[in-house]
Image (tube, rainbow, N blue to C red; front, side, top):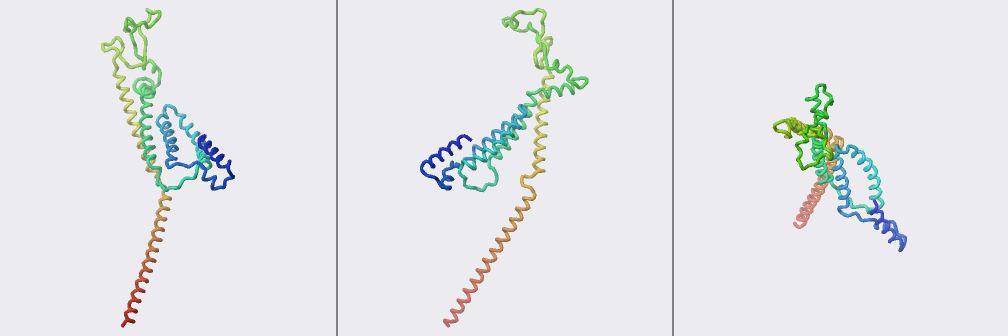
Length: 275
């Protein structure tokens, strides 16, 4: 908003310092909108849409802030286009062009990224797995210990000073992972539980993506891009245009037929006169 306003003030000052401009001079001295002037506007919205949709699970309030921003920006852009920029030359287009494909691709990517964020950066899968398969009463009692593994302090390298004042009474410590205990033959390797959770995460991602794609496809099928009333109106207008074209063609053919008959009669009369 600042750059167009400053340019408008400068142009207005440069025009007013010589004489009082007329209305057409004031309109002409507005900032000229380039051929790709809307590129930055589309790009701004696409970037915002990408950040909101791709990382919405990480920050669920992002859509709210985007909505508040867009409500304000609608009015600011309207003022900018009406008062700061010169009116562009109108061009007929069917849609927003390549931007639709970009938005569609970002929407599909966002489904996958949100599924991965839920599965691999949150404890949703672990908690669900624990309540369904591990917990005897279906609650999260004991869930914290379920996520921890044991480590024998004596397994630290000798030259690694972990404690400034070693406590000989402490033999084990816990850390968050799913590894075998130090008493096992394959100590500190991943448990079978780790691979079960990894499989559950991948299954969740697959189901999540399939469900969302099915829902979006169903919604697109139920809600067409062009409403039925608009389609009927377009067909009605096309029918009227076709009738007008046919009537004009009939008029032209009648006129050409009359002109042809008149020429033939004139030719016959001239031949009779010559005889």
